[in-house]
Length: 261
Image (cartoon, rainbow, N blue to C red; front, top):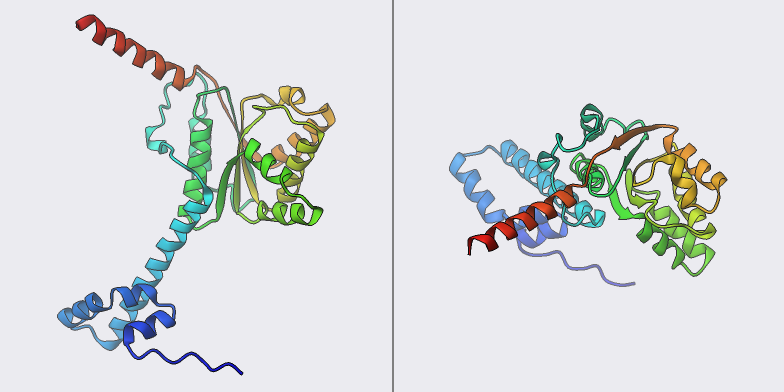
């Protein structure tokens, strides 16, 4: 039999062994505050537990944000609501409140390039994590690439289960590339496994009637659309590209600066 690890001799080490990492790190400051404010033993215990739980919550959120792989994105406070020619703002604000998550519904954002659909999707993932949910963001291309790399049926099933775990899965840029039969089947498996179980956020540059142009056949597109839209909020954005406007404004500024020289 292997001998048990010796019990740490210092209070800080004992706290760490108990998993109270934050308390161990802040021990001296905590003792100083407790002494200064003359906390009773009960108050000390309450404050210790509150601080430890708050630290663990922060760590959990930080870990989930890292796992979500959001990268850089603009907050919805920076969204220019007046720029699109068509966008139902109350629907966007309603989904940002995450009411669709307990109902296991989906959110589908349909818009041309540069109108903020990825921004909305990333903010939904971010909001979900801050609210205590697990969430993941990735492009459709990265999803398909990851699944096609699995060399055995067992490995594929294991990987598919990882995409079922998050409370919210955001798949960006569906429809930007054409899918062969195998890629379409993999995407369908992800959608089908999450159907009525966990929520999806889908962004696409194509209206549903054009999905048949990027999937191998109409039946495949119809099956996907049927599961995605059965319980879903659909947000349609119309207008000119933000990025095109910003590029034109930047070019105009450069020309004005040159003319002043």
